[in-house]
Image 1: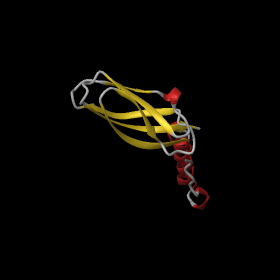
Image 2: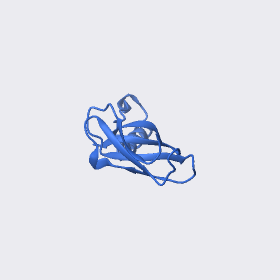
Image 3: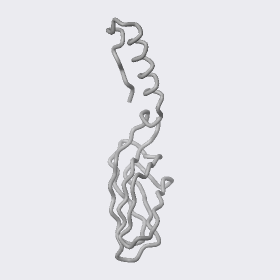
Length: 111
């Protein structure tokens, strides 16, 4: 995503230059140069799950934003090396058989 401002339409040169600096700063942020989607996934028990991502590419970057375990303990591992053109893979461990993990993450790739 690139921020496009029509600064040439601003008559005040000081204001126009400030808008240009703001746009340059925003455009330099790497999080904005990628293609990401937010996923909210629920998994019961310890297992590896193949979750359909419905992206037009193989996602290689994961930014996990939230995780909770109903039993209070557990771990998640994003198996990025297994991702393919249909599924992303996540493994849960350290939970009871009926415990539930809820995880949210931005999944995609930086360009």
